[in-house]
Structures are given as C-alpha cells and as structure tokens.
Length: 267
Image (cartoon, rainbow, N blue to C red; front, side):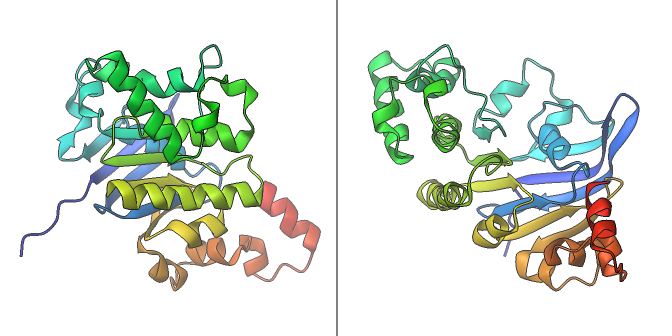
C-alpha cells in the first residue's frame, strides 16, 4: 500500500528575523485530513513556522513543501497561485474595517477567480451561513463582537474551499464559551470540507478538543515532539510533560515559592 503524502513537509528549517534564529533545524510532517496543533511556550517559533508555511517569511535554509510544492523555490509572482487552496485565519482576524463583512469574504473570490458577481454573492452567502453570520453580511467588522469577527474571518478563509486551513491563535482574546464554540466550528468545517487543519495555539482545552496530532516546539526553536495527541501526553520529554501538566520548569524541579514559579513563567 502506497504511503500517503503529508499535506505539509518541512525539512531542516532554519528561520528568524534580523540575524536572530527563531527556528533551528525543524523537520516535521503534517498528516493529510487531520487537525494538527502547533504548541509550545511563548517565543518558541509557532507563528514563525506558520509564516514559513504560507510564504510570508522566507527561511534562511531548509525546505517547505505544501501539497507537494516546494514553496522556497517559488518567487513572489508564483506563490499566490500555489497557495490559492490554502485558507489562513490570522490571529486578529485581519478584516478590512472599511468594507462590509460580505465584501471581506468576497475578496479571495474576486482575487483568484473570474466568477460573475451573482455567483460570488451566493458563495459568500453560503460561507456566512456556515459560520452563523448570515445576518451580519452588511455590517462592518468593527460593528461585530470579537467572536463574530473571528467567525467572519473564518468564512473568508474558507471562501475558496481550501484543502488546508491554517489558524493562528484562533481563541486569542475570546472568552472560554466563545472559544469553545470556535473549536466546534473548526471541527465542523473540517468534516464538511474534508480538509487538513493546522492550528497554532497554547490553549490546552482547545488542544484536547480539536487535535489529532501535536507539533511541539521548545526553547531555542527546536522540535520537541511530533505525533498523536495521546502520545504527546505520555511523553517523557520534560518540556513536553511540563507543557501538558501546566508546570513551569522551576515548579517541576521542586520550586517551593509560588512567587518564584510565577516569575519563572513570565520571564
């Protein structure tokens, strides 16, 4: 039986900014048709990895293949076409506040297709209905709650029926109930469109709810774990174990002072 090609294949990836290395030799596969959560402590390179996957950041070295295409070999003109079937949900939604929610969702369709306006309008209607925002089509993003803006941004990310959906901290800034609702919606969209989903998050309840697989980056931008969630929870790696147990390294080593543990967490 032939091996199924991963939707994302990263090899020996080194990336950073201004001479500072953020990701150091990361190699990982993201399985087709599954939900993969990229996790780890703040500053470990989660969003940097996502930026490399969508071509927003060119790596210093290494390779990134998405759906079999080597992104690092593409120029700025060829990259958008290669990523046309990749949806991206930005951390803050990145909606344009000067145009309506419906026009925001229509942007990818107008950019990447030659569909007539009535067809685009119907596709926008269906996507907004899918995320429960039919009533908000004519509103400006600034008129929506935080959770509604995230759902509107998700509708835009789904506009072209992507094979791969990438979400950067989708629960950031949301209350627990709204965040839980967004988790359910992401799973619903995965099942409806039979797509692969990658979610950057540090929220353990979300990871437990949606993850099939986990990619964990550690301090220094090194890969600490890649595999099924159940195996991550059983990992003997101290950084992985501390993350899932919500322990600081100091607490795991027996720190007796709660203040010291808190200071260590925010250092």
